[in-house]
Length: 151
Ligand SMILES: [Zn+2]
Image (cartoon, rainbow, N blue to C red; front, top):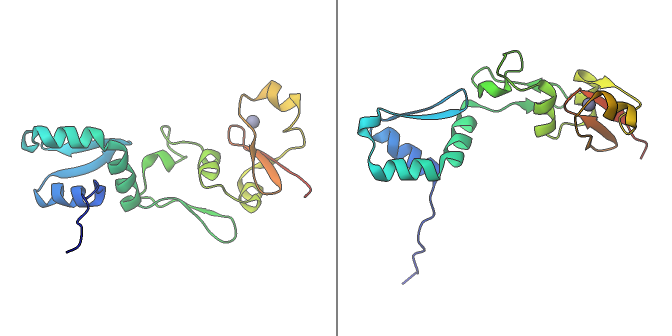
């Protein structure tokens, strides 16, 4: 007889369960919405609160996520979470998305601005952004500047 381990919470199983009960589960500008509320049990509310982050991640995956193409260009599905829609007022900057994706130099060359002072006080004087390390380059997601580093 095999030992049956206690199943861990599975966001995808729970999401399917909610939908099977005809509940609507969606993201509204990054906020998780489940309804109608009167159909939710107390156990549901506890579960949803506890696993909110996992459920949001899963819904974002379903909607599609920004992807980098081989040439370094960024593809942002229209259906994906609106925070990735950098053209919207409530969207994050394209550079923040590049940083989240650990985009390569080719992407920064396409969308950023080359700078020579990222590691100096000049950058710190004009920008509060933190300088991040890429492969053979550094970049600042706040001002979109990047600087090559010779390997
Ligand atoms: Zn900066």
